Length: 207
Image 1 (tube, rainbow, N blue to C red):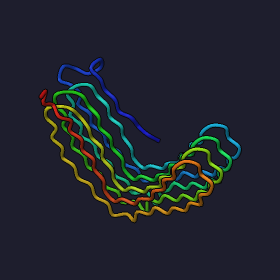
Image 2 (tube, rainbow, N blue to C red):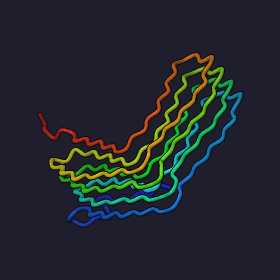
Image 3 (cartoon, rainbow, N blue to C red):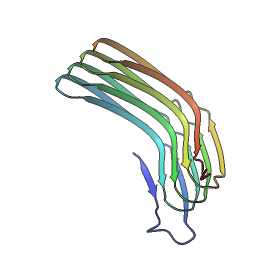
């Protein structure tokens, strides 16, 4: 499902990396996970995800990125149904539906990113129904539905970012959890987000 685009100093020219990414999706993206798990001596991890467009870019030199993603699918949905009992370790369940996703991580002196994302899908929907019982460790459930998301991080001295995100879709995250007899901690989260951008620019000041 993911389409990584990667470049490093061994493959790029002296001008660094120039990355052009254009993604368009008109088809459904559907993931269905049904899990019945019992009597496990270690940990349990359950994960389901559906995405229309996704790109992951990692470089180690000067980088210019131009990326665009457009999604007009009728359905982008991820559904997880899980019954988990008698686990000695910890249990983690992750369910996610994403319309457009872009991630850029670089380590040069210049990082320039131009990002355009438009989600016009019907309704990115994440549905999670989980029942757990008799867990020896911790339990966590994270359920999320996202229209457009951008993540960019670098310690470059210069980091110009031009970001535009448009969402015209309904975003639905439906979460149901039944939890009993857990020895450790319990964390349950549900989130529905139209547009999300996280920009991290690490300090380059030697002091």
